Amino acid sequence: MMNFTVHKENKTTAHSTIFYDQTTRGIIAILNCPLLLASIVGNAFVLAAMKKISSIHPNSLTLLCSLAVSDLLVGFVAQPIFIAGILTRDKFVQNLSAVAMGSACSVTLWTITAISVDRLMALRYHMRYDSLFTESRVRYAALTIWLVNVLLSASYFWIEQIYKFTMGIVTVICLIISASCYILIYRVVRLHQTQILAQQIAIHPPLERNGTDMRRLSRSAINTFIFFMFLIICYSPMYVILFLYGLSFIEWKIEFNFFTTLMFTNSSINPFLYCWRVSELRGEVLHTVRRLFCKHTVES
Image (cartoon, rainbow, N blue to C red; front, side):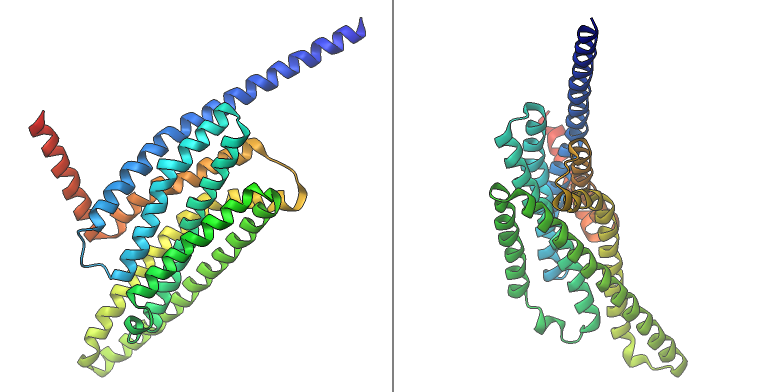
């Protein structure tokens, strides 16, 4: 009689666990659907607008395009595979999701880091920046970021634990580099403000153009810092989980899926950040949206 009762309780617990697991996976899938659409539509409009903008420095435009493409692929490739993986629970689909997610999201992280380094170099070496960081060098750097991350993500199929541990370590390194860049940017900007104040006291007008350039670069650095802060908020929980998994072999499946969704959220937010912080891009995106809307209205 006691064995029958224990068996019945275990069966009830198993059914509750299965129901809870299915409900959780359904909630995660539902949460990802609007994020997926926002990422695709938003980044598609941003990329279309970037082709028509000439006022942004070519190096910044190259890195922003790389960032927008990685965010677009998150919504167009990584998220649909992720949703299919958590709904079907197919092992191959889940592995494919990990590779796609690792490639696209890591490119986003590395590109944000590259942008922070680029802004620091533009501020510190603004007189020699164009000769040191040519358009071709920045393009090669962007292509290298993509190639290295695709190869690194493919290693997931062979050594999953080492891959996750490595991704955690690399993420920490990227965050440290970016944080260091913004500390140095802050120091450069403060030094420049001191120089402007001394210039105003001495009434020395020849440095006026240099001051205008530095203010423009400072604003660009502030914009990049805002992107970086949103990235930290969205990415940190996921990579903490990866790092801990690499150390302990403990899997947090539910937490992993929710933190993956939070990481995908960054790709949906970035287009709105572009339009908020970059006035030239905002104007072109609004113009594109109006033109498409008017065209659709006329055809209807």
